[in-house]
Image (cartoon, rainbow, N blue to C red; front, side):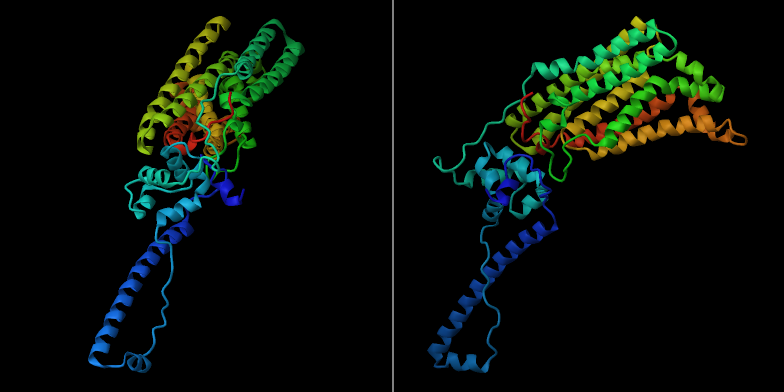
Length: 442
């Protein structure tokens, strides 16, 4: 199969084959060629009529032509049907498509917009895709048989893996409450390593895995970027240590550091690790619903309008499940239920994972980095304020803490970042090209 055929495979392409300025020039050139052909035809007819009149009047047409300057413009042959040229450009996409919406999603992924479709004398991309689907030649004996769109199913492996982080975290928290001194420190370190490995394994398979579907057009990263993973670990670590450290920094500086380590609150981290299971199920629910709406929609606008409520509903369902887990962990561990801190962080991590899963990796890395930098700056300025002449550095942090307490810093950082990612997700995850090709089952 040619390289062009690989690029035009149905669904979301893996190459940055966007509809760029060069493609616009190609389309404009095709239209100009059509206009030139029509002009050449009119010129030919005019010259023929002039020759006929010259013959009737006895004037030598050849002599006049010899005296005049001969025409230097030769008629150009171009594509008389720009839609046919577009079909040739996306031949494999058209031949393998099972419905016009799949072609429309592929065109959208390549950067073809409604404005581009208007140049083909169509009101939108879906109308153009319908014509391409109707005109494509399908030979039952030679053309490859299209594979119907299937919905990823539930598999026992990823369903069980999502329960592993919560189970290991619960065992670690139990060990922390039963040990003291160096044994407690060893349990904490080993437990943190085990939970981190379990979370990575849970995110490596199933609906939260970035390997379960190809990246959309214009993206090349199919796995979680290292920076995104590092920022996520920092945010979780701050949920475990940051609030107590910030309170100690504002009151006693480094002198309050040992006391903060002894009075760690484990409820937020336990709730977040237990939330891996509902996060995976919510992501599966969203993917399943999106594939069903993709098959039932009659246009890109119809699909977008139906997927946005699905995304918001799935997101709200996860927030409810996470809030219930926070309340449960606070009750069992007899610790304050940090609803604001834990829920905002969980919302941020879920949105970042959904975008990464569908191939949009740049925005999660930037937004998570901004939230982590905000928390780190708050801690740094709080400790630095105890240096001689540097008390003014803690003024912004003290203002926030005076209104919302120590939990206000992560709530503002993670809440603002989650809102930005939610707005970005409603725009990107509601596009048909983000769901055109189903992932590996499970």
